[in-house]
Image 1 (cartoon, rainbow, N blue to C red):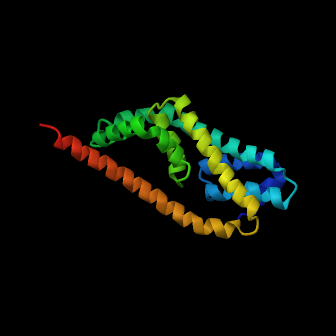
Image 2: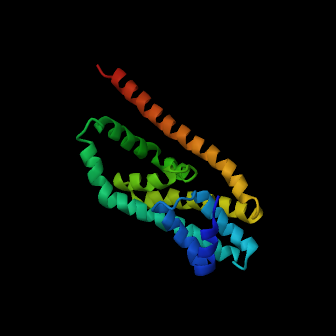
Image 3: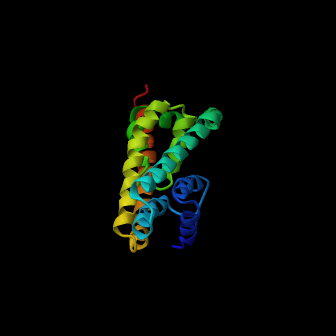
Length: 199
């Protein structure tokens, strides 16, 4: 995978680049988050960057970009949800909101480890007006674990991390697909159970 532009950013903007990359990922930078987090670790082994400020830059970029997505959901997504509730998706939206109310805490934490879901979750919970304090309580520790995992991988394998992550990426995509299919199945089963219980 071509990551030359990450090196150029790091050389040009220093620690700020590790913060900025996470914002660019939010807006569609065509590179997996895992590579960006690992790269922040790589540069601490292959150049003069210090581990602590590099990690804090990457982590703060991840957290603040998630907060930004949450804010977008809060400001604009609620109207979308209200409109969707007037369509045939009303029952599905309501079941998903119930799911968030009962299992949203752990869904937020787990979503950090699923490509794609990681960026959709803050928007969704913001749109559903999920309490910000509760969101941060589960998002920040999960984001810390996720960032330090890939940061450490980059530091440990600075010359092999691309190959490692290239193979790992397919597993993570499969895991994301299974999680989404599992959620759809769970919502379908609870809907069927709810209908069965009606008289």
